[in-house]
Image (cartoon, rainbow, N blue to C red; front, side, top):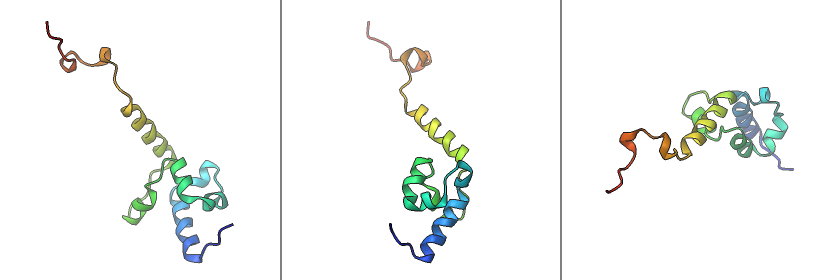
Length: 92
């Protein structure tokens, strides 16, 4: 088991609390075992930078929605769903 210094524990505790991860059922001890991995799991990997910039990170429900929107946006749109002006014309 890794040993953390007091400043490291305090830093990750601040991130954990700001992200409201306890509401998701995550224990701080489990979070501390792999903080960045847990943040990635919850779609909040940018939380430390957001906090460093002076803002609050997304709530877990907001992070889930962001992940869902990003996944949906990455899916290709079938040609039949595209408006006619976006559909390429075939040469006659």
